[in-house]
Length: 169
Image (cartoon, rainbow, N blue to C red):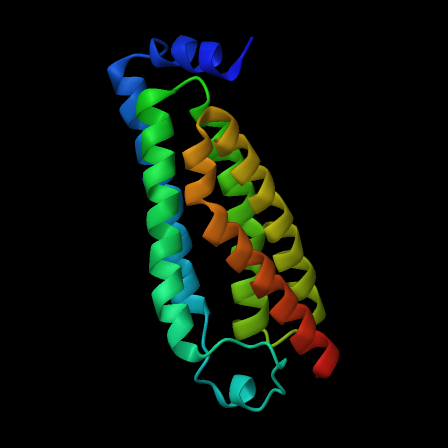
């Protein structure tokens, strides 16, 4: 079955309430992700400020610009897939949730527990799963995957930063 045929087949699958329930699932996962990341990540602590930074550390302002756009991209793709291709949404939602868990693990382990190696491993896993998320979204519609490209690149950079912090400290 070609991608176009699969897309046409998906469009007629699922009741309206199921579509909205799937969309709500994406909203919940992204809101929990954003909220817990905000609560657990502390870049102002004395511990964090005392770490040697990798030379490729972006300026602090970049984080405040990129993360809201990443969350927005995740929401847009998740809701669109849920409403337009509900047969594909559960897998995407599961993969998103599967990437969020280790990403939040990084936030907690790094900023709250002040560990270096376990969070680096956790974020590397999250980055790998994020590329799977992008590939699955791309298979539904290429531009869904394109919308997640910045997020996947940012997660890869973040994992490289975390590894850099572990190596330098």
